Length: 161
Figure 1 (cartoon, rainbow, N blue to C red):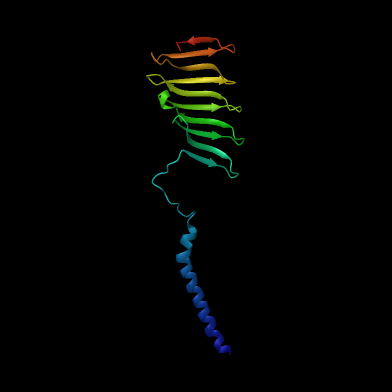
Figure 2: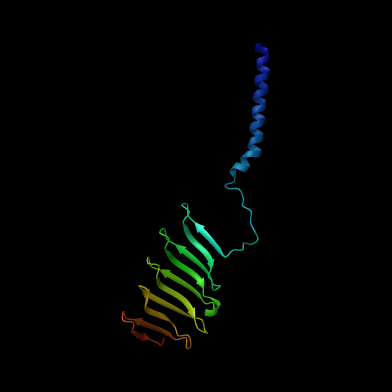
């Protein structure tokens, strides 16, 4: 009986070594890949794409407005829209814009292009009201600064708005 044990052990040892060698060549490369490759589509058509966090809350959204303008919206952890990157509707010449919103979801700063020369304009707001406007005049392209008091009265600092 002892003589039958040695050949069986030897065959088992050789089979184990062979299995280890095969597994090392076939299985290890597959395990070394960090992730399986995702299928890549040539395109995706949608009116809205949402990016959600681990809890399922929307944190960013790429969407079309009802008037046909695209926008990229970013939300804080409380669901408040804090940043918008977009293009105005065709009726507003499709000028690009960036809006920073306060915690009340009111625009606090707007950077946009305006007029026939696509002049840059920066509007600073507080509580939803314009407080200061900086930019290039849409006709002359000369720089201007206008401050707006809490009573709504405009005070030019320089240039013409």
